Amino acid sequence: MIIVSLHEAEFYEKLEGDEVHCLLCPRFCKIQPGTLGNCKSRKNIDGKLFALGYNRFTSVHADPIEKKPIYHFKPGTSTMSFGTAGCNLHCDMCQNWSISQVSAESNNMINITSKQAIEKVRNYNCDTIAYTYNEPLINFEWIKDTGKLAHENNIDNVLVSNGLINKEPLSSLLSL
Image (tube, rainbow, N blue to C red; front, side):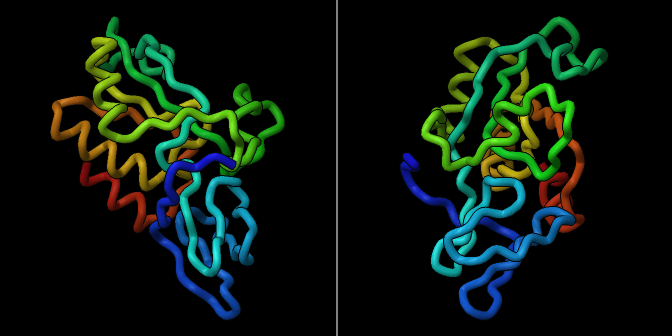
C-alpha cells in the first residue's frame, strides 16, 4: 500500500481494545485493529480510524456534465471527475465494480491533493468538480476539504452518490 500520508477520519468513536465504531454511514461498522470497514476505505490503525482514500484516486477525468447524469445543470460544460476505491453498497450490477469493490489500500491509485484538484479543474477549463464513479461519501474528509476550496474558488460541487450517509456528516457537507 502506497499512501503518502495518513488522514484521520472524522465521525467515529473509540471502543474497548482499540476497536473503533465508524459513524459515517448507517452501516455503523465496528472495526477491529488492522482491518477495514465494509466500504474498504476506512481502516483502524492502532485504535484510530483513517480515511485511506484521502488524496488517492482510481479515476480522474474531464467529463461532459451530462455524463453525471445531470441534464439541466450547466448544460454543455465540462466537469472534472474524481473517483476513489470502495463503496458502502455492494450492488451486483454496478457499472463501476472494478473500482467500487476494491480496497483503498490498492497501489493503483493517483495521489492528488485538494489544491491540485482545483488546479486540474482550472487547467481543463471545467466549471464544476464532480465526486463520482464509486460512492464518493466514503471519502468524506477529502470532499469536505476540496468542496470548501472549490466554493472559495467559485467552482460548483457535484456529488453523484447513493446517499447512504448519516445525518450529522451530511449536514456538515450541506454547508458547502
